[in-house]
Length: 452
Image 1 (cartoon, rainbow, N blue to C red):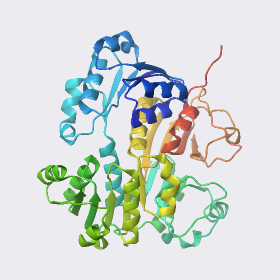
Image 2: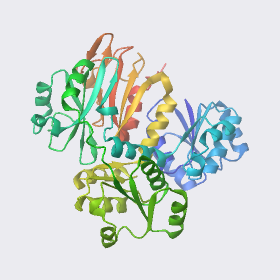
Image 3: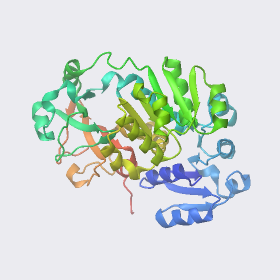
Image 4: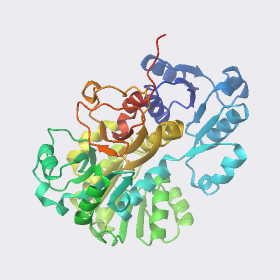
């Protein structure tokens, strides 16, 4: 497919990295020549220096022949205009990044009026994942996800203490015909391999045949434990803080938002109902103590600075807050996060990139997908004969650590695969993938290149 990406910022680069492994011709448009030069040295893409708001540029580059245009500059209005222009000029599908809450209240009207096919919002996307974690606690609906004869269950090790200390080989003997596809440990999702052991405090994700998984679910499911969320402190009154405070307040939670910018505090206080907005510096531990941080059921650090978010999250954990969540936009910190022991760290760019990829691929490849703690994705794919991973033993695929072929539904049979298993045409394949490995997954499910 021919795909144009307008805006070479963090999101544009993340999307490029994810798509470049697939069978796509990618064009990146930006006004910064230096950034484009670095991109052209890293990726096999076409770069164009210029303002995509100029209709002449879009026409000259033949935007009418493109399958997709993704407008992801740091300006909402610019993204809306560029996407609308591209659609009018014949681009098949257009996607725009729009973040402002005032736009989100009229999003359907914007899409219809401007001819935009799909709108993504990193701040709202991360808010929905945090809200789901705090309010429902389960990533999977009610702790279980079923599709056809395959099902996945999520449960905490306190519900099955016998598994603590076991290797994955021992777990497979205790729970035959099932596979541990992921472990949530200290705020980080791990796709485990033979070297891993189950530890106290882990949350496990297992896959297997539906009837057996439902039997296990009846034994390990926790009912009603997480309905007592009452007090939440949010650090940072930006767009993420705004969306999250609004949703939690609607749910009936007492929310405190701490923001250091006085003007922003005024905006928040006039646009949020039943939310306490405090002007102050959250890095001042005495200030947090005065605001009773120890009494909070949850603490969310959502400033624009990763280092500050992680520092504040660590401070909250040391104060004994049960659920501590941090917004982290750089994947460099993923190993540090696990050592810090915070409960959840989310990257908004990863979440939105996953959303965009699923939209681009549509129903042709992905028949369903589900985010897991905002860090990984479960997806079901109908295999075709010309996909890269078809008709090859899994041991010969050299799968990266962050991608796991979890189950194969073939006819009436559910297969928990091993190294000798081959994926055949029309198999329904369940895959577990870390969001930062989406580019590797794209290579696996793309069509084999022909050199005729």
